[in-house]
Image 1 (cartoon, rainbow, N blue to C red):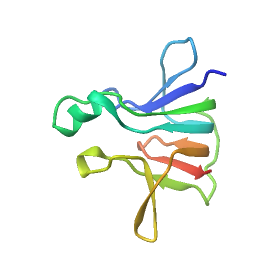
Image 2 (cartoon, rainbow, N blue to C red):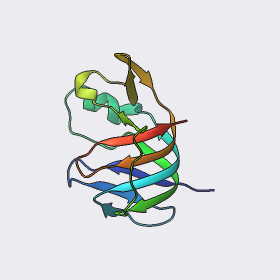
Image 3 (cartoon, one colour):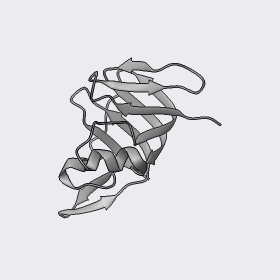
Length: 121
């Protein structure tokens, strides 16, 4: 089954949602279920690290995505982090002061402030 992709669009601002065989849809907030994280890799990621122009080199693949809906994030959801300009090479949560790599989520919440939260699988 094809999955819906989503990522934060740094150029436009806001989330970009791409359903299978469809065009990109802008979103202020997103809620996804059954999430696999495409971790950064490849030429675009290497160029970003060297200071070149930004590009999409990582995204979230979801079984289902709700756009701009009323979905409430639960208190046990954890904040995900990824900033290649600060040396990050993968999405992670912070537990006891340590970065813990995250490759999949039961659910995720992309907020209007660019933050991504998730329930780690």
